[in-house]
Image 1: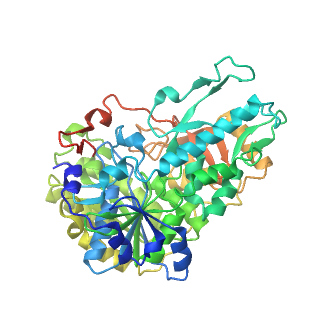
Image 2 (image 1 turned 45 degrees about the vertical axis):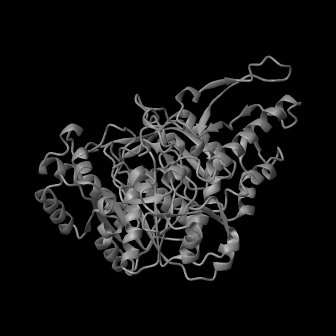
Image 3 (image 1 turned 180 degrees about the vertical axis):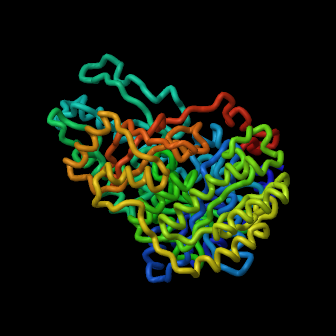
Length: 553
């Protein structure tokens, strides 16, 4: 049965009842139909004095084309915690239309561990990403309008790009302003995907509506002939952009198939952005639940690193426990086993591939100082010999393990993990950041590259070196770094899965995000506008004869 069918065949509770179960008042809720709603920020103000719940971060090994089920695991764990009598709340990212219609598919979990209504969440949901897209593109329109009517600010170089919430490689580089009209200045430009927009990053890192407006005003949109920055505030744009986001900033409330409350808000990618849901959503969830289960995008080298070094630092929070998700088939893939043979037993491939998992756990446990457990998404073709090998290997390294079957069994399949998380989160943990903000930009990049990725060093293009110097000269050198890197490898080469040989990280560009208050570091061949695969998921998405959506997975 398809995920969409499982979700459709499950009877949901009205969203008012879900809200009531966690103490949200009726006047703090804005319904979007029967099964989804927005929570007013007034609720957070009212609940500020509540004790924070335990925060559990779900991360993973480097992803593979086989899928590791990180979101499914997070949902299953939240349901599992409810099954053992704990008041749990989920805090997840919103899906982007790009991957839904591309190769990755939806981001609402799978099997019997899903958030719902899954079609709505995966498609337009409550319109947050559309609002972000509109705000981004209004700023672009105001820039070009300003230039058309005299360019009083003296734009010499525009750095702000338009965006669209789709994977469209044709838009990576475009020529704009070709109408030939008087005062319309043509230029070479390009689009980012909406989830890579600085507006999305600001949206997820802002603490309230005023902080959102302040950050939007600080966005650098271009430079004059003296190379002095021009901001959104110089264009008097911050007010209108904030108005477009005034409803979007309120977190969205939905539920799992087992009626566990889920706050779903914000959705930056982790390979090209910082990969975490909004600070507002996470902190609100921590006031509403005893245990809050959240996730960070892709592998722990990307999502967890940015969750810890950027989000936790800004929000002044830390996880009480971390779940590192893997599958035995993915570990064999990392060990060099061809995808078409992955269901066959191979201790040799597993032994090679388990190093990827161990490196992630070592980072989380020994570099960051956190309490970590490994959760294996169990498949029917996993053999007892493979499971026993993995269990013994991790036991020898004093790493806890839980086998999870939440895809097939929902929360029941994650009870063991839930029980272990409760015990683990009682242990003392401390969060050691990978770098100090007072270090130079180069030192911070080097810290992440060597400590977290395991690189032997970093190489820079002349352009990247020049931009680093300019950013530090402008007084922004003390910001955190957000490294844009392939998700498939610790290195910046997506095909170098095992990273057995020494490697270096190659920096091609450095981009200041003064509104988001971090510095984006572009490595390897990473792009901020993805493309569709040869056979996109969009080809299989349709309406059946009854008007039901099919093909979303």
